[in-house]
Image 1 (cartoon, rainbow, N blue to C red):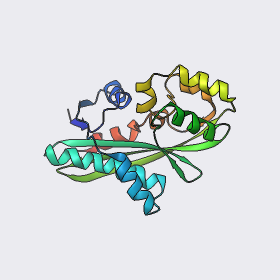
Image 2 (image 1 turned 90 degrees about the vertical axis):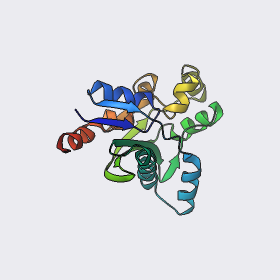
Image 3 (image 1 turned 180 degrees about the horizontal axis):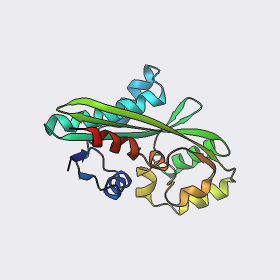
Image 4 (image 1 turned 30 degrees about the vertical axis):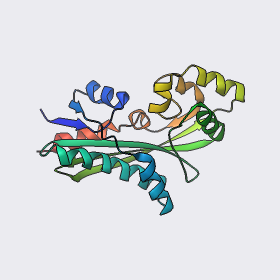
Length: 194
């Protein structure tokens, strides 16, 4: 059985791999994503390109140290009308993100990359469209009060697999993409890898 290294500390991504019986080991890349995002934004990179670049950089960083292993890097970003929305830095930040998305549609972009010996050998990007219901500020604050700090800062502003589902009027797209790992495409690639 193929073993992959997950270059991420995301518990949700690890759970998805485990659920699909993909033998994996977690080795976080600890990449400074903010510096990379700022640099790419200065070059007018789209949210999709930023997501792809981060997934590739994470996978390449670990695969340089772990030769002959397949390393999976992943990144998810919110694209709101062409604007990149990053993970909140604090609860005030989280509230302002929710206020911005309130009653509107945005894209969630998840990119994955598999690298070997320091170079990308496969990548895939998928998008989901999410339309948030309209809430009062009190309702948004109440929602945030139910989310732990760990969850809030690890999984963007909403946890689609938990409380976050209630925020949405309409969700179009693959559930695993929304949770940060388009597993069907990863499995297709691994099944054909030899």
